Length: 231
Image (cartoon, rainbow, N blue to C red; front, side, top):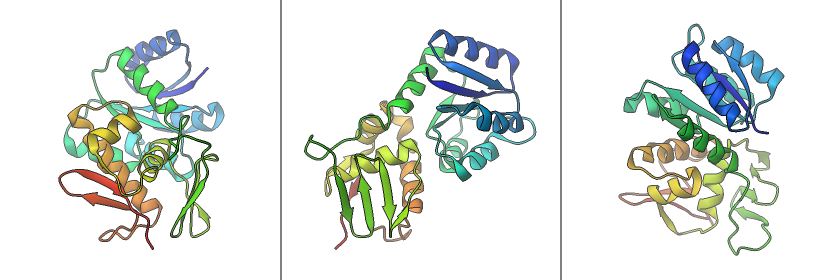
């Protein structure tokens, strides 16, 4: 039974989401504030966090930053702040997905299921048994779902790992943002292209890509991204 930590200050929204998710078979722990949510994170050990941004006290963004400091648990931000700047900031802070209120329970459920499936079916280049691959200083273990760079483990959130596995499964191939949305996030409407750009930015930072001349994840202007293996 998937464990969902719901951090939402609005009592009506929190209770409605809690009941809806329980009906879908989730075990749900609800928190009213960011501080309470961070405390429940350690004791409840959720499979996914559903996080409101506009919280009293510690903001949702700060909660996201603190979670990402030592955990790669999937985070879905759910908020009324739907401006582009708000969405980009939220995604670059480390959220795996972003849903603007009001959101129907079935949509939230679909997003939760998608984020939980994200690392369960890692793509393999030949469809056979996944194997570890080395690209320059980067080593990707598809079976173990681990990544190292210069011998050091790289902690990746599920969306970041899934994005890297998808791109590196076909080095040199250009993927459009829409193709990556379908492959990684399982949805593809236009507005969510920001998910891809924000996730690429976080992934490049984690694997130590030079900001102006990335070695592994190349931007193909007007099209999308491709994975290159440096010599």
